[in-house]
Structure formats: C-alpha cells, structure tokens
Amino acid sequence: MKQQDKEDPRVEESPSALNFEYNINRFGVLFLLAIIIAALAGLFSNGLLSSASKQNTPHTFDVNYDRFARLMSESEINIIIQDLHADRYMVSIGNSLLDNYQLGDIRPEPDKMYSHGGTLYLMYNAADFPPPLSLWISITPRKPGNVTSTVKVNSEAEITYRQFVYP
Image (tube, rainbow, N blue to C red; front, side, top):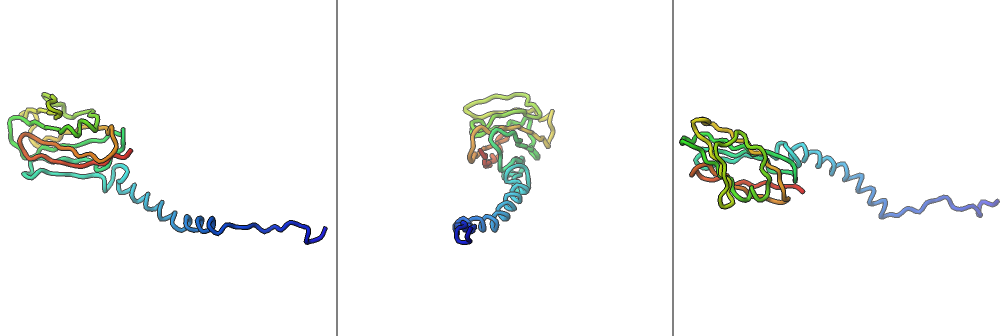
C-alpha cells in the first residue's frame, strides 16, 4: 500500500470550540471561587452578609433576622424588647409576614394571641417577662421574592425590614 492511499490522520479542530474551552478554563475557576466566597459570606444561607438587625427610633426594641431565606426552609426572627416599661407587651406583626410566611414555633408562648385586620397580635404580661424579653418566631417562606415586613411593640415606632426569598 502506498503512502498516498492511507487516510490523513490529522483532525480538523473548530476554532470557536477551542476558544470556548479556553475561556471556560480561564474564567471558570474565578466563577467557582466567587460562588464559594458568596456562600461563605452568607448569600445562600447563614453567614456574614445574611444576618441583619434593625432597631426602632427610641431604641426600645430591635429585630434580628436573615436578609436571605430559602423557599420552604425554616428560619427565625428574634424580637428583643429592651427599654420598654409597661404593664404588658403587645407585639404586632404585619399582614405581609402572615401572607408570605408560615409561622411556626413562637418562644416564649404569649399569654394571649389573636389576629385582627390581617395583623397578628401577641400579648405578654410584663410581670412574667421582665426586660429584656427575647421573642423567637420560626417562619417558613411560602412565596419567593422580596418581602417587606413590619413589627411593632405597643405604641412604639414600628420596624420595617426586607428579606429576599430564593426559590
């Protein structure tokens, strides 16, 4: 058999496919590193960027929450009543929280709890819970998106906070 009759063993390579592979190798490591850093910082769950705290103007209570939540994954809101001197504490939770989240465990249990006009009211006897009262509410997001919620204690200034829920 002659040398000319043999098939040419060379492979034709596509320049666009080679260019794509080069870019993936070049930027893929940076992309994966960015995802790892975002996860460690708390973008996808608990971490440095995810925890947030807001305090009302007279500094009588504050709300600790996670900026980011995952759909159908339980998280908690912590309401701390500090320098509020009253016979009872009435914690009002706005209808936005009730519409977008499923409420779970409330610790400590309120003396009285009712809903009126889309707002949930939790009442505590101040003699049973001297300040600071730390109230924990377990919530499970039911809808993805950006949710704005309000919390108010007695007639003090309310706190409005935002939470982004991943699908």
